[in-house]
Picture 1: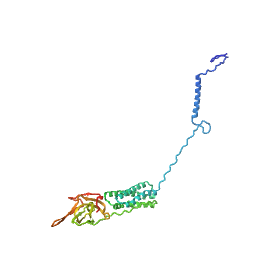
Picture 2: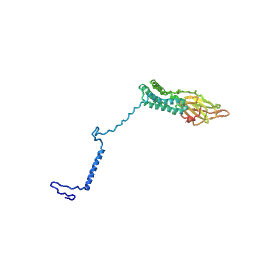
Picture 3: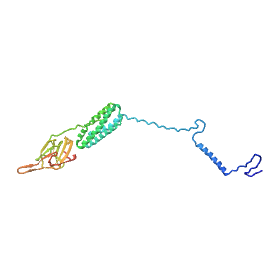
Picture 4: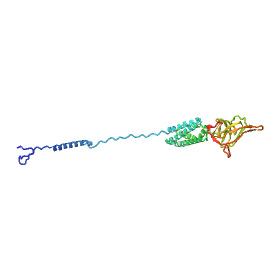
Length: 342
């Protein structure tokens, strides 16, 4: 017996015949979802780490290799000998230039360089690692370099103040530095320990105290007149007084400290009066080399001779080279370059 779709027929006791299932749209969606889930499971299984095999190493992951940086080499200290020569060499070069200075300006510039090199040498050697055998001489050298720099500062100040006003005397003053003895001594000790360095102390000469006899004419012009001049020197040093015309000395006379000098025969005329004070008179340059000062009387001196039928009158002047109560002559300091050479 034929039946319609979706109906059952009784074909015998205890049996039931079911018709073909009806496929609906919801059934197809369920199957598709199941397929997608299965595919998703496969994808997830493929992306998971590790091995699922049963052989050696199953279930373990491989570790990335670790990079070890190379060791940093320890720098090797420079040997003491080359370090010593490096810092003493420039000082030796500057010292050799001192006797070549043509004037005080050049000498001052070179002294500044010597001081600078001494400071740099001291700073550089303080950072050096000296051998045990050279330790005492090394310390002695550092102290002497500091002392040399200080001495140069003192000499520079004395030059600026006029205490040393000539190249020779300023150089001789520099040469009095005790460090110019102790530095070579320290270097000799270092050389004996096997660490030589060259340094030569230049010849600097000696400070002198040269002077002329009181009343010596440094410049003697024509003394055919009748005028007279007396000079009392109560200052702190010797002096040279000059009578000048048109900026040039006509007569110049040396007056010792604490003494009076006089000369006659000054011709009529008006003279400017200059005087230089100091010590250690250098005959070659006609100038003092130490304690220099230069001044000028504000008012000139007039020398005049008059004659009458019964007499002759002439000018006689007395000048005091020091401040005195009731004095009527004023003076003004002048630059060395504005002072006429005696």
